[in-house]
Length: 276
Image (tube, rainbow, N blue to C red; front, top):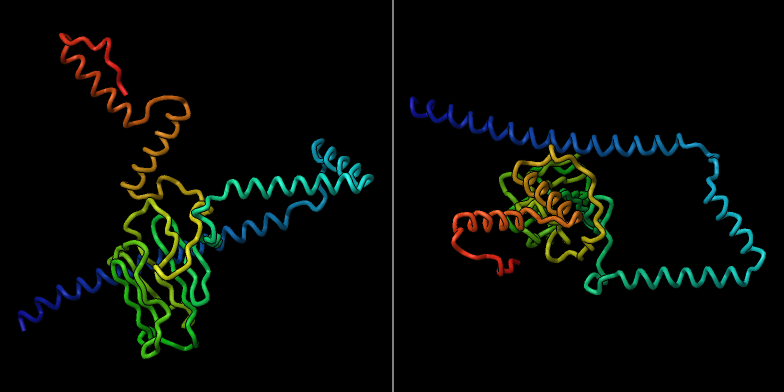
């Protein structure tokens, strides 16, 4: 009984710790959803409050006058419109990378809407929402297996599973969770290992999305963890240096090392040396 009581205390502590971690992750997920909903409501409110009648600027007035002139000569206007549309299409075709041909456009959450599930992503994690085939199912009726590079999700004793494939990249198993929303939808949250890349697909059998068309939401540096924040700040600094024609952090480091070396060896002549 002494041993039992001893280890029971440790087991209770470990269980309480895990429960607290799960509750904390669920709280963050709930806060994120509430934030997204609030932003959507604020946007809708702003749109509804916009005045129906707007004062025209000089540029808009000139454009309307130009359109009126074009109406007076339909053939000329049609020719101009056709040329403009052709130029726009040609420009888009030139800008389109051949390697991205056939790839899907990301959804509003920078992921993809598929027949059986929908996934969205940020740089740090991925959310997968799976509508259940029938209402009233409980957690014990589901099979959810999250591995480092594999995901399986489905209803017990029903084949095939809704998802059963290799993930595109690795995830952190200990930081990934799942829960049942309203007994109708399974929400799976996957924590990315590499927080500096966008996924082009969830699992290997999914169609690819064009990651070049991803439109990430602006975020504050204070929201990032220490390592990610350091990388982002370094990238921002290097970008500013390049725009001003100044050396990046790596180039500055090399220059400082060379300067220090030259100071330590005044007997050497560096006047004819070329540094790159």
